[in-house]
Length: 166
Image (cartoon, rainbow, N blue to C red; front, side, top):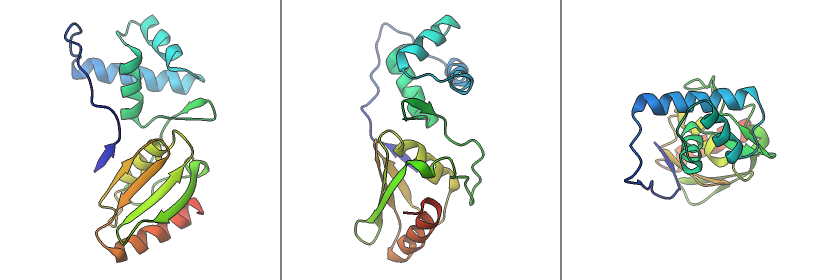
């Protein structure tokens, strides 16, 4: 389960709702553009997408970035790792963003990250599908990770400490 804290999506009745194909094409273009260069602002990304013929707004690009698990760190956009496996995720590129770990009761673990990196780390944890994780909720720099019980939390904390050295 993956949940992100964000404002509900607003629909503008004057704009047509994009079909799945258009959204997939736009998100593919975003990933390609971010891989090819160092886009530092959403305005630049919107301009590049419009230049390619995509009908976008800053809010649609913001939503796409969030849905794709893209975060912003050190003044540039960071793509989530592509090669996560089910049980042994490649978290190497994300370790630099994790700042701390703390238990909040017997079944909630709080992982702190640099500003803007929490969603990418949460996506990686979700994709790893660890059996001890019931779900995650991420904000901008904080992730709540739920476990079924204290024993599962112990296993999770050991795993997180080994991966992130926190």
